[in-house]
Image 1 (cartoon, rainbow, N blue to C red):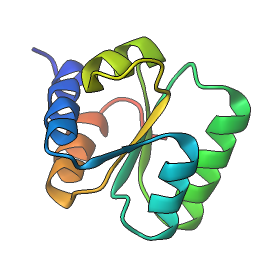
Image 2: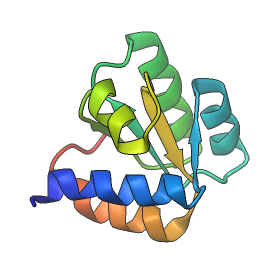
Image 3: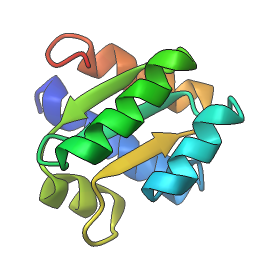
Length: 106
């Protein structure tokens, strides 16, 4: 399996471990509280949501990545219609950054 899809496995593990936050407002709260270690944003997220999340990430120095579309993201975390996810655990975040930094840095 190539690195671009390995991150989906890590994301699934992080969700099952209870280390993920979903929903735009909740993710922003996690970023502001400095609990968010990385934010993954689906490539087909609306511009307004994309801008809001990336601006917060930049301001609080949280790494963010644009990943596949919302369907792939939702499937990986087992929740329907998700466009972004915050991973709030350093180990998972480090591995995700490692896997994603080769292709689509936000």
